[in-house]
Image 1 (tube, rainbow, N blue to C red):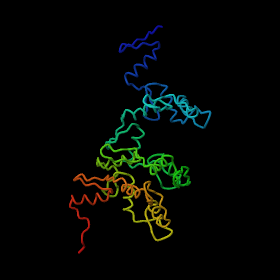
Image 2: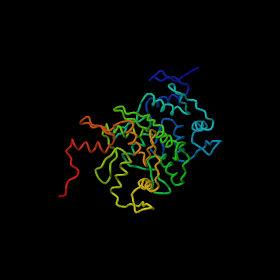
Image 3: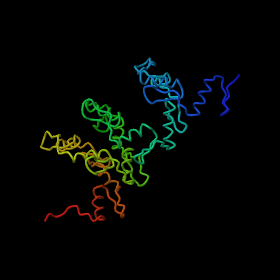
Image 4: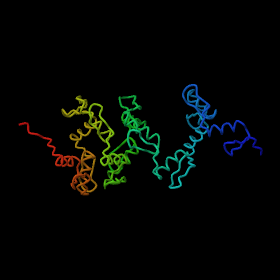
Length: 345
C-alpha cells in the first residue's frame, strides 16, 4: 500500500504523520510527554497515561479469580498465568520455564554468568537490579521493613515474613530424621544437609566446601580480605552481619535475657537458647559417622573434622593448617610476635 511518509534520516516509511513523529522521537531520544506530578517523562502519550495511574491509584484491570488488580491489561495477562499454570517461556539451555520474558532474561544470566549491576561502593556485582538494591542496604544500613509486633526491622521483605512466624510460633516444616522444625522450606532444605553431609558449594581458591551460597560468600572474604560490615561505635569491621550484631553487644551493658533455672543472664535470645541446653541436656546435632551428639551446629562441624582430617584454616606465612579458626589466630601470633597476655607483676 501507499506509504506517503518517508524519513530522510533513514529508510523508515509509514502511512500516518503521527507514526512518523513517534519514530523520530524514538531515534532522537526526545521525551515530549511530561508528568505534572513528578519528574517522569516519556516518548509516547500512552506511556504517560499508564504512568499517571501510579499517582491516582487507579487499577482498572481486575483478576476474576482473586482480589488482584493492576494498571495494565498486559500485567493482568501475566498474573492470570499464576492461576492457569501457563509458563510459555522456555530456557534453551535447561528445562526451566517461566511466565515472562523478563524472568527468562534473568534466568539466562545463571548460564552466561552475566552480572550487569555493579555496586558503586565495593566490587559486588549481580544479575538483578533488585539484588543490587538489597546489597546497597549493607552499606547504608537501611532496614525499611519493620515488624508491627516488636522492634525488629530487616533489609528484605522476605526476612520480615520469616520473622513474623516467631510471633505466631508457626513452624510448618519438619525434619523427617529428627525433631527439628522451622519456618521456611529453605531452612529445612539447609538443615537436611546436616544429615546428608551434602556440601554443593565449593571455593574456587581452596578445597573449602559448604552447604549454602551465603557461607561460600563469607568464606571468599577470607581470601579477598573484604570486610563490608562496620561498627558505628568503633573501628571494628567484619565479614558478616551476624558477627557485627554480636560485636554490637559488646557496647551494651544490659543483659535482658535471664535463665529461669539459674542466675545466668545474656544479651541475646540465641545465647539463652544455647544455655538452656545445659539444663535440659538437649543435644540436637548428631554425627552421622559415630554416636557423638552436641548442642550447636558449630560444635558438630568441628567434630566432623576429626573423621575427615580436614584442616580448612591455613596460614599464609607458612605451611601450617588446622581445624579451628581460633587455633589459626593463636598460630598467627608466632609470626606477629604479639603477646596478648602479659604478667601484671
